[in-house]
Image 1 (cartoon, rainbow, N blue to C red):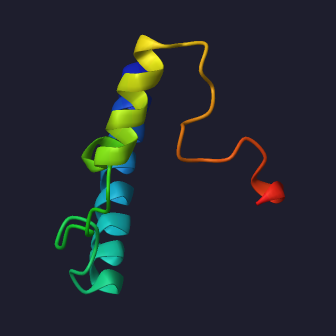
Image 2: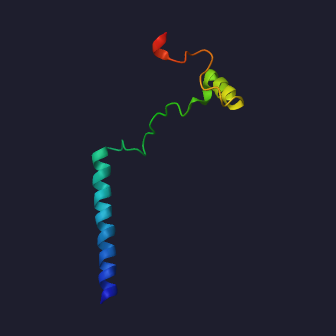
Image 3: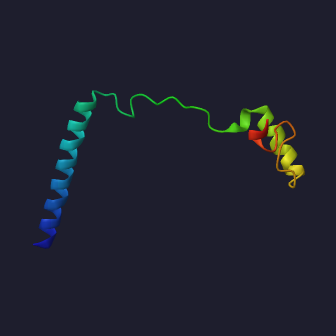
Length: 77
């Protein structure tokens, strides 16, 4: 008796999933996330030469917190 109820619930869940999936596909007209990938922007600053230079300088001299081409207090300039 319990097994029949569980099987009935599973079949009902599959049927409801199929109905909602079909409704969702119809409403999106195929323009969902799977049909057209979104454009990707820059991932990180690893292509910026000045950033990499500053990073390498800070790695070799961890006590130096300010790069030489920037003032220590930006409001003073």
